[in-house]
Image 1 (cartoon, one colour):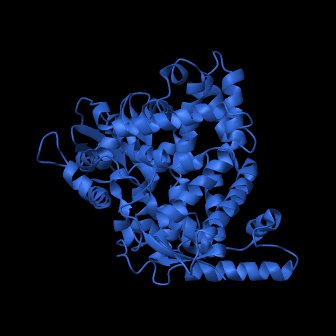
Image 2: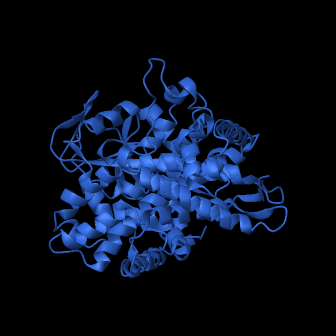
Image 3: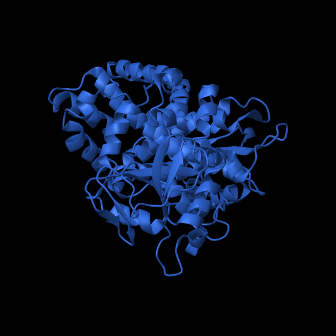
Length: 504
């Protein structure tokens, strides 16, 4: 992982999540029907220090003292947070009063440097591109992308295997697993000719700066992130000019390019297209690759390590080969591997993926109030005005002990087995790793199935364990870089050193 600007990190850590989205908040005249403000003693600074020190504890304590909905003053910003499953669900259901579109458009400009001319002055993005994403990434349409990521993962794992010249390879989980999955995701979406290896380092830098772009940080403090973003945009411009680039690219990209060039009036320029494609690039790799990383990392820190997952995948392979004696699962037959992965019973791996996403995700679902006098169903005591912005703090739901039990903050790989994912009343427990409502991640079906299949492929090919020659990073929540709260899947605080050997 490349380090971001250290002075910027130090300056923004104390503001954490409040600064990430707080710039949306518009001050209103005081009235008794607004949510309570978490008390603070120092003007302007507010709760920034306690929030930045331990966001999970801050939100838990604030909710216990002030209820499900409260306002936080931090580093000159005021932000209203919604922290309960019921209140968040009520906001999601009322999409006419609590609107996501202003945030999506604003982030298109602030995060990805899309020109305002294509974001605000042209209806093509709202009326065509956004609905197109929803259609193409529907569950019934993602099979080609899933097949592609299996193919490219198999190819990349063969390359990784060639690097193990002795008994084992001492490396980092970031360099071994995260980078490999980054390359597989990139190839499955943008085609095998896309220079994923070249894009990896600038992507890591840009990804580090995403929270600061979202916060509207001054240009002086994000110069390194801007350079990395511009480097990615130039790469996409060059790639779109490469003959045959579309061979093997996913429909989500080919349709975007074709429509923006031929259907939109005026047509997108090459740079316009590159900025739009970069947003899809980050959406996939900024979350799916780190989500996969946590599936392995969190299991490695369990007492038995990856052993329970090896046991499951080995039993599934043995059962499949017994029922299909002519099947080739060595990696030479993608058809056989695809059929095995699609049909094998891998409940613990499936549960591990869901549990890893539950504990490692931190998403802010942001909604703008578009009319005066709006209330949240079930919370009539609070009234909101046009222009107010509410932040649905989904991580609080995942750590809610009333939903997930007294061990809600712990990683339990078998939590989603059998009845673990349902309430006493039989309904599914809220799972918001992909957000919810109209802002729910459109690529969630590809991501969830892709993580499961890729994890099974890694387990089938390599023995992986923590390297005892290096001090293991702390376990539990200490693994997570909490300065990124609100921006999706969290990053690790320190590299994880592993020993990798070929499976026999």
